[in-house]
Length: 117
Image 1 (cartoon, rainbow, N blue to C red):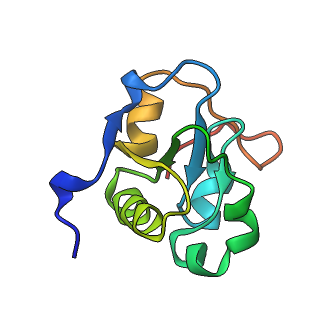
Image 2 (tube, rainbow, N blue to C red):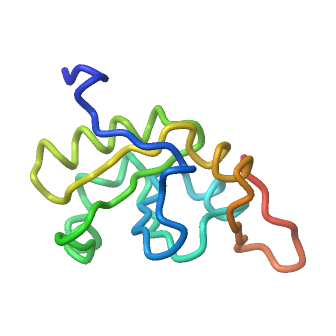
């Protein structure tokens, strides 16, 4: 078990305004309702079986892992770092903070306003 204090974490307000690599580990319905533009989607439960998608993530800069509020992304960050796959950083507050900070959202639903479930 990883000590939560040992998980690299940042806040949405500390993320680069442009160019941050986001990995969204929420479920498909959460993703479809509203997600960050340019984010990569791999649900938490699918991470171990997603080696092809994980191999496409950059290894020369941090990958910021995000979920709804920060719990699932903390688990994913710990797993990714322990596996040595990427330099993962948990995003505290998740997509709820993303929305509160006024960051861009997009949806997979036509004619619907993006929302964070």
